Structures are given as structure tokens and as C-alpha cells.
Image (cartoon, rainbow, N blue to C red; front, side):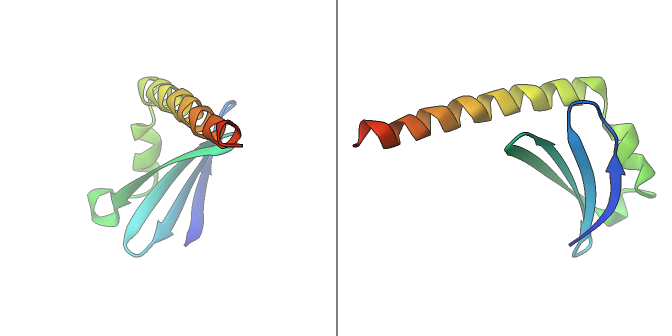
Length: 83
């Protein structure tokens, strides 16, 4: 897997990777990561990915990150409850 593009953003680390006929869009916030696989043939080039990343899309990503954090904290608390 190789990085083909980084998309600057003030909150997220956004990278596009290429692997096995797919682009993989990775969005990171702290220790959490979301990834989206896109078939290479579905895009003209990687600039199409920039057009897909709207404010609404990133707001929804933030909601998922918050849910991920809540789920992880709940799971991590199980560790201390079992001691």
C-alpha cells in the first residue's frame, strides 16, 4: 500500500492510499481512523476524491469518531471492572 495523496485539513489527517486496484481514503483523528475503499475504475483520478470530501461528510465522520471513542471507553472500562 502506498500513499498517493495527502489532503490538508485543520482537524483531520486525510490520506489517499493505493492498493490492489483500489484507492483507500483514510481519515484520522487522534488514535481513531476511518477508511473507505474506492474502486480505481470509479474515479477519473485522485482529484475526484477531493470533490467527495464535503463539510457534511466530515461532520458525519466526526460523529462516528465520537461514537468510536465512547465505545472504546466503555470497552476499556470493562478491563478495570474485571480486576
